[in-house]
Length: 544
Image (cartoon, rainbow, N blue to C red; front, side, top):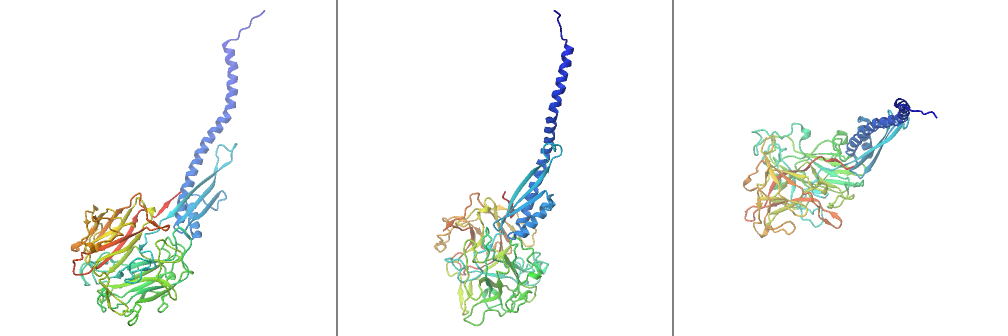
């Protein structure tokens, strides 16, 4: 029998064929995996681009809410700029409204395959984003009147405001409570050092007030109907708060109608949007005659200035009030604002915005005056604060969305007629704060320091069960005219667990201010101050 023997060389020859065959079989899936590795990286890159486009689209669209059409157009334009055009058949942009202040965008596109087409032509990519616009802080009170003096308050059960609004004349002097109305730093003169905060552009002069018909923030349910905007004594009517009736400042008003873009006012302030006044039907600025006081006693000091159709124009109406640059005027003009139903009715108000009652509040700056007395309908002098010499009034609405942020309060020229003031959270808490000052014509405030002012009630006359949290509390000491002509900047850290007290299912997020004067003083409380309130941070944010 013959024997055979296979050599190593022959064995290697047989195995090389096997390796070649196996490699050939594995090469195809290996190439597919490599192709997918490249394509998956590309898909992730496209998905990131889609997410950035969705974020940009949501942020661009939300500022146009509650006008859903304009919001969608703005979102699609932002998506197109970021590489996703809704006109492309492979791109789909879906938008949704989220209340009146929220906006949702979903971008869908086809992710291309570059090396894996033999297995998969394309893949669906979808990314979404939602944004919310946190409206500016309403500055004033939660009702349809502001600066109503001794009148019935808009919130049932609240005391009368006992304050009025006021604008200083060009020649009154910067250190008399109005940082933007006075042209000079001197007192009751029209010469001296120029106030560099006096606007050079006439359209920037004065103060703006918002007549808000937009209704609750999270709904698309605006206030409707016909309303009268009334002004309390727009002329010079012999009030102490108006000074000399021959040299007091004349008041000029202009009203712009609201529109569907209630989160931005840039498109409101155009000539075509001006609203006619109720006196002569003119849409231009109207200067109120000095004798516009409501007639002879007994009289109503409220004058109908504008008749508003909230069905035709909704959203936020803007009223500009200003005094003019005249050397003959060196005293202020006090006034008040209120919205009442056309044809008769009373002011209204609720802690939470409602769809039946508009709100009146200041835009950016609130110029107030707390006088020692006010004339009533019969021209009788009424002392506004009697012997208690305290004043507590609403300041701003700070919802819980601002937890862990910083509330910044600016008050210009506080103190000549009071001793201290406190800022009260909705539950009466006086949070610690830091403060800085901005002196006349300074370009930047001094450095912030911890407030070291602590106050105790000087007598039982200051007892306030609703706000007094013990006998020792945080305050701003303003005695000795220490802040005359100075802007004080207060920053209050809002706690991370900040919560608005709730009653009857309604949250009260309104902060207040309390003024106090020593009861031993021979004069009642009085103060002329201009306020500004904001929450530091971007009002637009992504929520998804």
